[in-house]
Length: 594
Image (tube, rainbow, N blue to C red; front, top):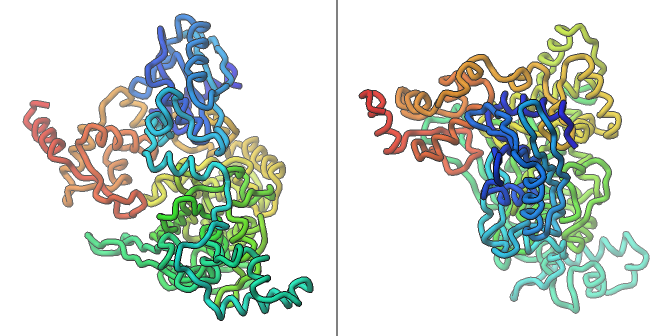
Protein backbone atom coordinates (compact mmCIF):
# COMPACT_ATOMS: atom_id res chain seq x y z
CA UNK A 1 0.00 0.00 0.00
CA UNK A 2 1.14 3.56 -0.68
CA UNK A 3 2.64 5.64 2.09
CA UNK A 4 3.05 9.43 2.18
CA UNK A 5 6.38 9.40 0.33
CA UNK A 6 5.12 7.04 -2.38
CA UNK A 7 1.91 9.04 -2.86
CA UNK A 8 3.91 12.27 -3.18
CA UNK A 9 6.15 10.63 -5.80
CA UNK A 10 3.09 9.32 -7.66
CA UNK A 11 1.55 12.79 -7.79
CA UNK A 12 4.79 14.20 -9.19
CA UNK A 13 4.76 11.56 -11.92
CA UNK A 14 1.16 12.39 -12.78
CA UNK A 15 2.00 16.10 -12.98
CA UNK A 16 4.82 15.25 -15.33
CA UNK A 17 2.50 13.27 -17.59
CA UNK A 18 -0.26 15.90 -17.31
CA UNK A 19 -3.20 13.50 -17.10
CA UNK A 20 -4.55 10.37 -15.43
CA UNK A 21 -2.95 7.18 -16.69
CA UNK A 22 -3.93 3.64 -17.56
CA UNK A 23 -3.32 2.66 -13.93
CA UNK A 24 -4.14 5.77 -11.88
CA UNK A 25 -7.36 7.80 -11.66
CA UNK A 26 -7.61 10.94 -9.54
CA UNK A 27 -10.97 12.38 -8.46
CA UNK A 28 -11.68 15.53 -6.45
CA UNK A 29 -14.37 13.91 -4.24
CA UNK A 30 -14.05 16.54 -1.54
CA UNK A 31 -17.57 16.20 -0.19
CA UNK A 32 -18.97 13.17 -2.06
CA UNK A 33 -18.01 10.41 -4.45
CA UNK A 34 -18.39 11.33 -8.13
CA UNK A 35 -21.24 9.46 -9.83
CA UNK A 36 -18.75 7.78 -12.19
CA UNK A 37 -16.66 6.20 -9.43
CA UNK A 38 -18.18 2.76 -9.99
CA UNK A 39 -17.25 2.95 -13.67
CA UNK A 40 -13.59 3.34 -12.74
CA UNK A 41 -13.82 0.46 -10.28
CA UNK A 42 -15.31 -1.78 -12.98
CA UNK A 43 -12.72 -0.66 -15.55
CA UNK A 44 -9.76 -1.38 -13.28
CA UNK A 45 -11.16 -4.77 -12.22
CA UNK A 46 -11.75 -5.84 -15.84
CA UNK A 47 -8.22 -4.87 -16.84
CA UNK A 48 -4.88 -4.99 -15.07
CA UNK A 49 -6.01 -3.22 -11.91
CA UNK A 50 -5.24 0.32 -10.81
CA UNK A 51 -5.11 2.95 -8.09
CA UNK A 52 -7.94 5.36 -7.29
CA UNK A 53 -7.05 8.64 -5.58
CA UNK A 54 -9.89 10.52 -3.89
CA UNK A 55 -9.16 14.08 -2.81
CA UNK A 56 -6.95 14.99 -5.78
CA UNK A 57 -8.10 17.41 -8.52
CA UNK A 58 -6.56 16.59 -11.92
CA UNK A 59 -7.43 20.13 -13.16
CA UNK A 60 -5.24 20.99 -16.19
CA UNK A 61 -2.69 18.40 -15.17
CA UNK A 62 -1.91 20.08 -11.86
CA UNK A 63 -3.14 17.20 -9.64
CA UNK A 64 -3.81 19.53 -6.73
CA UNK A 65 -4.48 17.88 -3.39
CA UNK A 66 -7.84 19.24 -2.28
CA UNK A 67 -8.41 16.57 0.36
CA UNK A 68 -11.65 14.91 1.43
CA UNK A 69 -13.67 16.53 4.20
CA UNK A 70 -14.69 13.29 5.89
CA UNK A 71 -12.30 10.39 5.10
CA UNK A 72 -14.34 7.91 7.14
CA UNK A 73 -17.56 8.62 5.29
CA UNK A 74 -15.76 8.63 1.93
CA UNK A 75 -14.24 5.24 2.69
CA UNK A 76 -17.62 3.86 3.74
CA UNK A 77 -19.29 5.17 0.58
CA UNK A 78 -16.51 3.69 -1.56
CA UNK A 79 -16.94 0.31 0.12
CA UNK A 80 -20.66 0.51 -0.64
CA UNK A 81 -19.93 1.19 -4.33
CA UNK A 82 -17.62 -1.85 -4.38
CA UNK A 83 -20.30 -4.02 -2.76
CA UNK A 84 -22.84 -3.09 -5.45
CA UNK A 85 -20.62 -4.55 -8.15
CA UNK A 86 -20.76 -8.16 -9.33
CA UNK A 87 -18.56 -9.73 -8.23
CA UNK A 88 -18.16 -7.40 -5.24
CA UNK A 89 -14.71 -5.85 -4.97
CA UNK A 90 -12.60 -5.86 -1.81
CA UNK A 91 -9.90 -3.25 -2.45
CA UNK A 92 -7.28 -2.17 0.05
CA UNK A 93 -8.36 1.33 1.15
CA UNK A 94 -6.31 3.72 3.24
CA UNK A 95 -6.28 7.40 4.18
CA UNK A 96 -2.99 9.23 3.71
CA UNK A 97 -2.67 12.60 5.39
CA UNK A 98 -0.74 15.12 3.30
CA UNK A 99 -0.08 18.73 4.38
CA UNK A 100 -2.74 19.91 1.90
CA UNK A 101 -5.40 17.46 3.09
CA UNK A 102 -6.43 13.83 3.44
CA UNK A 103 -6.32 11.57 0.38
CA UNK A 104 -8.27 8.30 0.32
CA UNK A 105 -6.35 5.72 -1.71
CA UNK A 106 -7.87 2.49 -3.04
CA UNK A 107 -5.86 -0.17 -4.83
CA UNK A 108 -8.10 -2.20 -7.15
CA UNK A 109 -6.80 -5.61 -8.16
CA UNK A 110 -7.46 -7.22 -11.53
CA UNK A 111 -10.19 -9.83 -11.36
CA UNK A 112 -9.51 -13.39 -12.53
CA UNK A 113 -10.91 -13.98 -16.00
CA UNK A 114 -13.32 -16.50 -14.51
CA UNK A 115 -15.10 -13.59 -12.76
CA UNK A 116 -15.15 -11.00 -15.51
CA UNK A 117 -16.81 -8.79 -16.54
CA UNK A 118 -17.17 -6.82 -13.31
CA UNK A 119 -20.41 -4.83 -13.53
CA UNK A 120 -23.17 -3.20 -11.51
CA UNK A 121 -25.35 -5.99 -10.21
CA UNK A 122 -28.68 -4.19 -10.69
CA UNK A 123 -27.85 -3.08 -14.24
CA UNK A 124 -26.50 -6.34 -15.62
CA UNK A 125 -23.20 -7.01 -17.43
CA UNK A 126 -24.18 -5.68 -20.85
CA UNK A 127 -25.19 -2.25 -19.57
CA UNK A 128 -22.57 -1.63 -16.90
CA UNK A 129 -19.23 -3.30 -17.73
CA UNK A 130 -16.27 -0.96 -18.30
CA UNK A 131 -12.65 -1.26 -19.35
CA UNK A 132 -9.73 1.13 -18.88
CA UNK A 133 -8.43 2.69 -22.11
CA UNK A 134 -5.61 5.15 -21.58
CA UNK A 135 -6.83 7.63 -18.98
CA UNK A 136 -10.54 6.99 -19.54
CA UNK A 137 -13.18 4.40 -18.62
CA UNK A 138 -15.07 3.05 -21.63
CA UNK A 139 -18.18 0.89 -21.63
CA UNK A 140 -17.64 -2.55 -23.11
CA UNK A 141 -19.65 -3.29 -26.21
CA UNK A 142 -22.29 -6.00 -26.00
CA UNK A 143 -20.20 -8.29 -28.20
CA UNK A 144 -17.21 -7.81 -25.91
CA UNK A 145 -19.27 -8.74 -22.86
CA UNK A 146 -20.57 -11.82 -24.66
CA UNK A 147 -17.00 -12.84 -25.51
CA UNK A 148 -15.90 -12.41 -21.89
CA UNK A 149 -18.78 -14.51 -20.65
CA UNK A 150 -18.15 -17.20 -23.27
CA UNK A 151 -14.47 -17.77 -22.51
CA UNK A 152 -14.40 -17.45 -18.74
CA UNK A 153 -15.02 -21.16 -18.16
CA UNK A 154 -11.91 -22.21 -20.08
CA UNK A 155 -13.99 -24.94 -21.76
CA UNK A 156 -12.31 -26.95 -24.54
CA UNK A 157 -14.36 -25.76 -27.50
CA UNK A 158 -12.06 -27.56 -29.93
CA UNK A 159 -13.56 -30.85 -28.72
CA UNK A 160 -17.06 -29.92 -29.91
CA UNK A 161 -18.47 -31.55 -33.04
CA UNK A 162 -17.36 -30.12 -36.35
CA UNK A 163 -20.01 -28.29 -38.40
CA UNK A 164 -22.36 -30.44 -40.45
CA UNK A 165 -20.85 -31.66 -43.70
CA UNK A 166 -17.22 -31.41 -42.60
CA UNK A 167 -15.03 -34.41 -43.45
CA UNK A 168 -11.51 -35.63 -42.87
CA UNK A 169 -8.82 -35.46 -45.52
CA UNK A 170 -8.41 -39.20 -46.01
CA UNK A 171 -4.74 -39.04 -47.00
CA UNK A 172 -3.82 -36.75 -44.10
CA UNK A 173 -5.72 -38.92 -41.64
CA UNK A 174 -4.03 -42.10 -42.89
CA UNK A 175 -0.57 -40.49 -42.59
CA UNK A 176 -1.39 -39.27 -39.08
CA UNK A 177 -2.42 -42.78 -38.00
CA UNK A 178 0.72 -44.30 -39.53
CA UNK A 179 2.90 -41.86 -37.60
CA UNK A 180 1.04 -42.65 -34.38
CA UNK A 181 1.78 -46.35 -34.82
CA UNK A 182 5.51 -45.66 -35.11
CA UNK A 183 5.52 -43.41 -32.04
CA UNK A 184 3.55 -45.59 -29.64
CA UNK A 185 3.51 -49.32 -29.09
CA UNK A 186 -0.03 -48.97 -27.75
CA UNK A 187 -1.16 -47.66 -31.13
CA UNK A 188 0.68 -50.27 -33.19
CA UNK A 189 -2.20 -52.74 -33.24
CA UNK A 190 -5.07 -50.25 -33.45
CA UNK A 191 -7.22 -49.56 -36.46
CA UNK A 192 -7.29 -46.05 -37.94
CA UNK A 193 -10.73 -45.34 -36.46
CA UNK A 194 -9.48 -46.26 -32.98
CA UNK A 195 -6.39 -44.04 -33.29
CA UNK A 196 -8.43 -41.10 -34.52
CA UNK A 197 -10.88 -41.40 -31.60
CA UNK A 198 -8.11 -41.86 -29.03
CA UNK A 199 -6.39 -38.71 -30.34
CA UNK A 200 -9.56 -36.59 -30.27
CA UNK A 201 -9.81 -36.27 -34.05
CA UNK A 202 -13.19 -37.96 -33.80
CA UNK A 203 -15.68 -38.53 -31.00
CA UNK A 204 -18.05 -41.48 -31.38
CA UNK A 205 -16.90 -41.65 -35.00
CA UNK A 206 -18.01 -38.01 -35.58
CA UNK A 207 -15.39 -35.47 -36.61
CA UNK A 208 -14.46 -32.90 -33.93
CA UNK A 209 -13.65 -29.25 -34.60
CA UNK A 210 -10.03 -29.99 -33.63
CA UNK A 211 -9.93 -32.82 -36.16
CA UNK A 212 -11.35 -30.57 -38.86
CA UNK A 213 -8.81 -27.80 -38.20
CA UNK A 214 -5.83 -30.15 -38.11
CA UNK A 215 -6.72 -32.89 -40.60
CA UNK A 216 -9.90 -31.78 -42.35
CA UNK A 217 -10.65 -31.11 -45.97
CA UNK A 218 -11.24 -27.40 -46.71
CA UNK A 219 -11.79 -26.38 -43.02
CA UNK A 220 -12.72 -22.79 -43.89
CA UNK A 221 -15.72 -23.93 -45.94
CA UNK A 222 -17.36 -25.12 -42.72
CA UNK A 223 -15.68 -22.80 -40.21
CA UNK A 224 -14.89 -19.38 -41.72
CA UNK A 225 -13.13 -18.25 -38.53
CA UNK A 226 -10.48 -20.96 -39.14
CA UNK A 227 -8.85 -18.73 -41.75
CA UNK A 228 -5.97 -16.38 -40.99
CA UNK A 229 -6.10 -12.83 -42.35
CA UNK A 230 -2.77 -11.20 -43.27
CA UNK A 231 -2.53 -7.49 -43.85
CA UNK A 232 0.36 -5.24 -44.91
CA UNK A 233 0.12 -1.57 -44.00
CA UNK A 234 1.66 1.19 -46.12
CA UNK A 235 5.17 2.26 -45.24
CA UNK A 236 6.36 5.87 -44.94
CA UNK A 237 7.96 5.43 -48.38
CA UNK A 238 4.64 4.58 -50.05
CA UNK A 239 2.82 7.34 -51.98
CA UNK A 240 0.15 9.28 -50.04
CA UNK A 241 -3.21 7.58 -50.16
CA UNK A 242 -1.77 4.07 -50.42
CA UNK A 243 -4.14 1.59 -48.79
CA UNK A 244 -3.24 -1.55 -46.92
CA UNK A 245 -3.11 -4.81 -48.85
CA UNK A 246 -4.10 -8.20 -47.54
CA UNK A 247 -5.53 -11.62 -48.14
CA UNK A 248 -7.13 -14.57 -46.36
CA UNK A 249 -5.05 -17.70 -45.88
CA UNK A 250 -6.94 -21.00 -45.87
CA UNK A 251 -6.08 -24.60 -45.12
CA UNK A 252 -5.32 -26.79 -42.13
CA UNK A 253 -3.41 -25.36 -39.19
CA UNK A 254 -0.13 -26.74 -40.55
CA UNK A 255 -0.76 -25.17 -43.94
CA UNK A 256 -1.74 -21.86 -42.36
CA UNK A 257 1.48 -21.76 -40.33
CA UNK A 258 3.65 -22.43 -43.38
CA UNK A 259 1.74 -19.94 -45.54
CA UNK A 260 1.78 -17.17 -42.90
CA UNK A 261 5.55 -17.46 -42.45
CA UNK A 262 6.06 -17.56 -46.22
CA UNK A 263 3.95 -14.41 -46.62
CA UNK A 264 5.90 -12.59 -43.90
CA UNK A 265 9.24 -13.64 -45.36
CA UNK A 266 8.18 -12.36 -48.78
CA UNK A 267 6.77 -9.07 -47.48
CA UNK A 268 9.56 -8.30 -45.00
CA UNK A 269 12.51 -9.44 -47.08
CA UNK A 270 15.69 -10.69 -45.43
CA UNK A 271 18.63 -8.94 -43.85
CA UNK A 272 22.01 -10.17 -42.67
CA UNK A 273 22.04 -10.57 -38.91
CA UNK A 274 24.90 -11.51 -36.62
CA UNK A 275 24.05 -14.16 -34.05
CA UNK A 276 25.63 -17.23 -32.54
CA UNK A 277 29.01 -16.00 -33.75
CA UNK A 278 28.14 -15.80 -37.46
CA UNK A 279 26.13 -14.03 -40.17
CA UNK A 280 22.72 -15.37 -41.18
CA UNK A 281 19.94 -14.29 -43.53
CA UNK A 282 16.71 -13.70 -41.62
CA UNK A 283 13.82 -11.29 -41.36
CA UNK A 284 14.28 -8.34 -38.99
CA UNK A 285 12.00 -10.15 -36.54
CA UNK A 286 13.47 -13.66 -36.15
CA UNK A 287 11.36 -16.20 -38.03
CA UNK A 288 11.84 -18.68 -35.19
CA UNK A 289 10.08 -16.26 -32.84
CA UNK A 290 7.35 -15.51 -35.38
CA UNK A 291 6.74 -19.24 -35.84
CA UNK A 292 6.09 -19.71 -32.11
CA UNK A 293 3.82 -16.65 -31.85
CA UNK A 294 1.75 -17.56 -34.92
CA UNK A 295 1.52 -21.20 -33.83
CA UNK A 296 0.15 -20.06 -30.47
CA UNK A 297 -2.36 -17.81 -32.24
CA UNK A 298 -3.61 -20.70 -34.35
CA UNK A 299 -3.77 -23.35 -31.65
CA UNK A 300 -4.64 -21.45 -28.46
CA UNK A 301 -7.26 -19.02 -29.77
CA UNK A 302 -10.86 -19.16 -28.62
CA UNK A 303 -13.44 -21.02 -30.66
CA UNK A 304 -16.29 -20.11 -28.30
CA UNK A 305 -17.69 -17.68 -30.86
CA UNK A 306 -16.89 -19.20 -34.24
CA UNK A 307 -17.06 -16.01 -36.28
CA UNK A 308 -13.73 -14.19 -35.97
CA UNK A 309 -10.52 -15.01 -37.85
CA UNK A 310 -7.03 -14.52 -36.53
CA UNK A 311 -5.11 -11.53 -37.87
CA UNK A 312 -1.46 -10.81 -38.72
CA UNK A 313 -0.63 -7.17 -39.44
CA UNK A 314 2.72 -6.09 -40.85
CA UNK A 315 3.83 -2.48 -40.71
CA UNK A 316 7.11 -0.64 -41.12
CA UNK A 317 7.65 -0.91 -37.34
CA UNK A 318 6.08 -4.15 -36.14
CA UNK A 319 4.36 -7.46 -36.68
CA UNK A 320 1.10 -7.63 -34.69
CA UNK A 321 -0.65 -10.99 -34.24
CA UNK A 322 -4.20 -10.96 -32.87
CA UNK A 323 -5.97 -14.07 -31.54
CA UNK A 324 -9.73 -14.04 -30.94
CA UNK A 325 -10.97 -14.51 -27.39
CA UNK A 326 -8.01 -13.64 -25.21
CA UNK A 327 -5.84 -16.16 -23.38
CA UNK A 328 -6.98 -18.99 -21.13
CA UNK A 329 -8.76 -17.82 -17.99
CA UNK A 330 -6.11 -19.30 -15.68
CA UNK A 331 -3.15 -17.58 -17.35
CA UNK A 332 -1.43 -14.34 -16.41
CA UNK A 333 0.02 -12.49 -19.46
CA UNK A 334 2.87 -11.16 -17.32
CA UNK A 335 4.04 -14.71 -16.57
CA UNK A 336 4.01 -16.10 -20.11
CA UNK A 337 7.41 -17.45 -21.06
CA UNK A 338 8.66 -17.58 -17.46
CA UNK A 339 8.15 -21.27 -16.81
CA UNK A 340 4.75 -21.02 -15.14
CA UNK A 341 2.35 -23.83 -15.95
CA UNK A 342 -0.25 -22.39 -18.29
CA UNK A 343 -3.82 -23.52 -18.70
CA UNK A 344 -4.79 -24.88 -22.11
CA UNK A 345 -8.04 -23.80 -23.70
CA UNK A 346 -7.98 -26.21 -26.65
CA UNK A 347 -6.47 -29.33 -25.10
CA UNK A 348 -7.82 -31.60 -27.84
CA UNK A 349 -6.36 -29.45 -30.62
CA UNK A 350 -3.04 -29.09 -28.77
CA UNK A 351 -2.71 -32.88 -28.34
CA UNK A 352 -3.28 -33.43 -32.07
CA UNK A 353 -0.90 -30.66 -33.15
CA UNK A 354 1.86 -31.98 -30.89
CA UNK A 355 1.93 -35.03 -33.18
CA UNK A 356 1.75 -33.15 -36.49
CA UNK A 357 4.20 -31.45 -38.76
CA UNK A 358 3.47 -28.79 -41.34
CA UNK A 359 3.74 -29.61 -45.06
CA UNK A 360 7.21 -27.99 -44.91
CA UNK A 361 8.24 -30.46 -42.21
CA UNK A 362 8.25 -28.20 -39.15
CA UNK A 363 6.56 -29.02 -35.87
CA UNK A 364 3.37 -27.09 -35.14
CA UNK A 365 3.68 -27.29 -31.35
CA UNK A 366 7.13 -27.83 -29.83
CA UNK A 367 5.73 -28.68 -26.41
CA UNK A 368 3.47 -27.24 -23.76
CA UNK A 369 4.63 -24.03 -22.01
CA UNK A 370 7.82 -23.63 -24.05
CA UNK A 371 6.78 -21.61 -27.12
CA UNK A 372 7.16 -18.12 -25.65
CA UNK A 373 10.48 -19.05 -24.02
CA UNK A 374 11.78 -20.24 -27.41
CA UNK A 375 10.64 -16.99 -29.01
CA UNK A 376 12.37 -14.98 -26.25
CA UNK A 377 15.65 -16.81 -26.82
CA UNK A 378 15.43 -16.14 -30.55
CA UNK A 379 14.82 -12.44 -29.89
CA UNK A 380 17.78 -12.21 -27.52
CA UNK A 381 20.03 -13.87 -30.09
CA UNK A 382 18.76 -11.45 -32.77
CA UNK A 383 19.05 -8.42 -30.48
CA UNK A 384 15.36 -7.51 -30.83
CA UNK A 385 12.72 -6.76 -28.22
CA UNK A 386 10.83 -9.71 -26.77
CA UNK A 387 7.18 -10.04 -27.70
CA UNK A 388 4.84 -7.57 -25.98
CA UNK A 389 1.43 -8.80 -24.85
CA UNK A 390 -1.94 -7.07 -24.56
CA UNK A 391 -4.84 -9.00 -23.07
CA UNK A 392 -7.80 -7.13 -24.57
CA UNK A 393 -11.48 -7.71 -23.72
CA UNK A 394 -12.14 -9.98 -26.71
CA UNK A 395 -8.69 -10.80 -28.08
CA UNK A 396 -5.06 -11.39 -27.21
CA UNK A 397 -2.54 -9.30 -29.09
CA UNK A 398 1.18 -9.91 -29.51
CA UNK A 399 3.44 -7.22 -30.93
CA UNK A 400 6.93 -7.94 -32.27
CA UNK A 401 8.90 -4.74 -32.84
CA UNK A 402 10.98 -4.87 -35.99
CA UNK A 403 14.74 -4.32 -36.25
CA UNK A 404 17.54 -5.05 -33.83
CA UNK A 405 18.08 -2.74 -30.88
CA UNK A 406 20.87 -0.21 -31.29
CA UNK A 407 23.28 -0.83 -28.36
CA UNK A 408 25.01 2.55 -28.70
CA UNK A 409 22.52 4.72 -26.72
CA UNK A 410 22.71 2.46 -23.66
CA UNK A 411 26.51 2.52 -23.78
CA UNK A 412 26.47 6.31 -24.09
CA UNK A 413 24.22 6.58 -21.02
CA UNK A 414 26.53 4.30 -19.06
CA UNK A 415 29.66 6.15 -20.18
CA UNK A 416 28.13 9.47 -19.18
CA UNK A 417 27.45 8.04 -15.71
CA UNK A 418 30.93 6.44 -15.60
CA UNK A 419 29.37 2.99 -15.16
CA UNK A 420 30.71 -0.27 -16.60
CA UNK A 421 27.87 -2.54 -17.69
CA UNK A 422 27.73 -6.32 -17.68
CA UNK A 423 26.22 -8.04 -20.73
CA UNK A 424 22.87 -8.49 -18.94
CA UNK A 425 22.85 -4.89 -17.71
CA UNK A 426 23.62 -3.61 -21.21
CA UNK A 427 20.83 -5.74 -22.69
CA UNK A 428 18.35 -4.59 -20.02
CA UNK A 429 19.23 -0.90 -20.43
CA UNK A 430 19.06 -1.21 -24.23
CA UNK A 431 15.62 -2.84 -24.02
CA UNK A 432 14.32 -0.09 -21.72
CA UNK A 433 15.75 2.59 -24.02
CA UNK A 434 14.03 0.95 -27.00
CA UNK A 435 10.69 0.69 -25.17
CA UNK A 436 10.98 4.37 -24.19
CA UNK A 437 11.13 5.24 -27.89
CA UNK A 438 8.07 3.28 -28.91
CA UNK A 439 5.83 6.30 -28.38
CA UNK A 440 7.55 8.00 -31.31
CA UNK A 441 6.58 5.17 -33.67
CA UNK A 442 3.00 5.68 -34.83
CA UNK A 443 2.12 2.01 -35.17
CA UNK A 444 3.32 1.27 -31.65
CA UNK A 445 1.55 4.10 -29.84
CA UNK A 446 -0.67 1.61 -27.94
CA UNK A 447 2.53 0.04 -26.57
CA UNK A 448 4.23 3.26 -25.44
CA UNK A 449 3.41 2.47 -21.82
CA UNK A 450 4.76 -1.08 -21.70
CA UNK A 451 5.48 -1.91 -18.03
CA UNK A 452 9.18 -2.73 -17.89
CA UNK A 453 9.32 -4.77 -14.71
CA UNK A 454 11.49 -7.66 -13.55
CA UNK A 455 9.28 -10.16 -15.38
CA UNK A 456 9.61 -8.36 -18.72
CA UNK A 457 13.38 -8.02 -18.30
CA UNK A 458 13.67 -11.70 -17.33
CA UNK A 459 12.11 -12.52 -20.69
CA UNK A 460 14.37 -10.02 -22.46
CA UNK A 461 17.40 -11.72 -20.89
CA UNK A 462 15.98 -15.09 -22.07
CA UNK A 463 16.70 -17.66 -19.41
CA UNK A 464 17.26 -15.38 -16.43
CA UNK A 465 14.99 -15.74 -13.42
CA UNK A 466 12.73 -12.93 -12.31
CA UNK A 467 14.92 -12.58 -9.20
CA UNK A 468 18.07 -12.21 -11.32
CA UNK A 469 16.35 -9.60 -13.50
CA UNK A 470 15.27 -7.67 -10.39
CA UNK A 471 18.93 -7.52 -9.28
CA UNK A 472 19.95 -6.18 -12.70
CA UNK A 473 17.28 -3.48 -12.54
CA UNK A 474 18.17 -2.56 -8.96
CA UNK A 475 21.85 -2.19 -9.90
CA UNK A 476 20.97 0.07 -12.85
CA UNK A 477 18.74 2.13 -10.55
CA UNK A 478 21.53 2.41 -7.96
CA UNK A 479 23.88 3.59 -10.71
CA UNK A 480 21.43 6.41 -11.54
CA UNK A 481 20.56 5.05 -15.00
CA UNK A 482 16.98 4.02 -14.15
CA UNK A 483 14.20 5.39 -12.01
CA UNK A 484 11.40 3.40 -10.45
CA UNK A 485 7.80 4.31 -11.22
CA UNK A 486 5.41 4.96 -8.33
CA UNK A 487 2.28 5.07 -10.47
CA UNK A 488 1.98 1.30 -10.81
CA UNK A 489 0.83 -1.37 -8.41
CA UNK A 490 4.01 -3.35 -9.13
CA UNK A 491 7.50 -1.81 -9.51
CA UNK A 492 8.41 -0.73 -13.04
CA UNK A 493 11.51 1.03 -14.29
CA UNK A 494 12.14 3.80 -16.80
CA UNK A 495 15.18 5.69 -18.03
CA UNK A 496 16.22 8.23 -15.42
CA UNK A 497 16.49 10.83 -18.19
CA UNK A 498 12.96 10.43 -19.57
CA UNK A 499 10.91 13.67 -19.62
CA UNK A 500 8.23 12.25 -17.33
CA UNK A 501 10.78 11.31 -14.67
CA UNK A 502 12.12 14.85 -14.67
CA UNK A 503 8.63 16.30 -14.38
CA UNK A 504 7.91 16.94 -18.10
CA UNK A 505 9.61 19.11 -20.69
CA UNK A 506 10.11 22.81 -20.08
CA UNK A 507 7.57 23.91 -22.67
CA UNK A 508 4.88 21.80 -21.07
CA UNK A 509 5.77 22.90 -17.51
CA UNK A 510 5.44 26.53 -18.50
CA UNK A 511 2.02 26.02 -20.05
CA UNK A 512 0.34 23.61 -17.66
CA UNK A 513 -2.84 25.62 -17.36
CA UNK A 514 -3.07 26.52 -21.05
CA UNK A 515 -5.56 24.95 -23.42
CA UNK A 516 -3.40 23.59 -26.25
CA UNK A 517 -6.30 22.54 -28.50
CA UNK A 518 -6.40 25.88 -30.43
CA UNK A 519 -2.68 25.51 -31.20
CA UNK A 520 -3.25 21.95 -32.34
CA UNK A 521 -6.03 23.05 -34.69
CA UNK A 522 -3.93 25.89 -36.08
CA UNK A 523 -1.01 23.54 -36.70
CA UNK A 524 -3.19 21.13 -38.68
CA UNK A 525 -4.75 23.99 -40.66
CA UNK A 526 -1.29 25.35 -41.52
CA UNK A 527 -0.01 21.99 -42.75
CA UNK A 528 0.41 21.76 -46.54
CA UNK A 529 -1.60 18.51 -46.52
CA UNK A 530 -4.11 19.85 -43.91
CA UNK A 531 -3.39 16.79 -41.77
CA UNK A 532 -0.70 15.87 -39.24
CA UNK A 533 0.53 12.68 -37.63
CA UNK A 534 0.79 12.37 -33.85
CA UNK A 535 4.54 12.95 -33.82
CA UNK A 536 4.13 16.04 -36.02
CA UNK A 537 1.49 17.41 -33.65
CA UNK A 538 3.89 16.85 -30.76
CA UNK A 539 6.61 18.82 -32.54
CA UNK A 540 4.21 21.63 -33.41
CA UNK A 541 3.14 21.94 -29.76
CA UNK A 542 6.64 21.43 -28.36
CA UNK A 543 5.64 18.27 -26.48
CA UNK A 544 8.26 15.55 -26.16
CA UNK A 545 6.09 13.19 -24.13
CA UNK A 546 3.84 10.82 -26.16
CA UNK A 547 1.35 10.86 -23.29
CA UNK A 548 1.21 14.66 -23.31
CA UNK A 549 0.50 14.93 -27.01
CA UNK A 550 -2.08 12.14 -26.72
CA UNK A 551 -3.84 14.19 -24.05
CA UNK A 552 -4.43 17.11 -26.42
CA UNK A 553 -5.24 14.92 -29.42
CA UNK A 554 -7.86 13.14 -27.30
CA UNK A 555 -9.22 16.48 -26.11
CA UNK A 556 -9.69 17.66 -29.70
CA UNK A 557 -11.26 14.32 -30.66
CA UNK A 558 -13.67 14.48 -27.73
CA UNK A 559 -14.78 17.96 -28.86
CA UNK A 560 -15.23 16.62 -32.42
CA UNK A 561 -12.80 19.22 -33.75
CA UNK A 562 -10.54 16.70 -35.47
CA UNK A 563 -10.93 13.18 -36.85
CA UNK A 564 -8.49 10.37 -37.67
CA UNK A 565 -7.65 9.69 -41.30
CA UNK A 566 -7.49 5.93 -40.78
CA UNK A 567 -9.86 3.53 -39.03
CA UNK A 568 -7.08 1.17 -37.91
CA UNK A 569 -5.03 2.63 -35.04
CA UNK A 570 -2.04 0.48 -36.09
CA UNK A 571 -1.86 2.03 -39.55
CA UNK A 572 1.49 3.90 -39.73
CA UNK A 573 -0.13 6.44 -42.05
CA UNK A 574 -2.56 7.45 -39.29
CA UNK A 575 -2.95 11.24 -39.15
CA UNK A 576 -5.55 13.76 -37.98
CA UNK A 577 -7.50 16.37 -39.95
CA UNK A 578 -9.99 19.08 -39.05
CA UNK A 579 -13.69 18.36 -38.98
CA UNK A 580 -16.16 20.94 -40.25
CA UNK A 581 -16.58 22.07 -36.65
CA UNK A 582 -12.82 22.37 -36.24
CA UNK A 583 -12.50 24.35 -39.47
CA UNK A 584 -15.15 26.80 -38.25
CA UNK A 585 -13.34 27.20 -34.93
CA UNK A 586 -10.02 27.90 -36.67
CA UNK A 587 -11.76 30.55 -38.77
CA UNK A 588 -13.33 32.11 -35.69
CA UNK A 589 -9.99 32.23 -33.90
CA UNK A 590 -8.32 33.80 -36.90
CA UNK A 591 -11.03 36.46 -37.00
CA UNK A 592 -10.57 37.18 -33.30
CA UNK A 593 -13.97 35.72 -32.39
CA UNK A 594 -12.83 32.45 -30.66
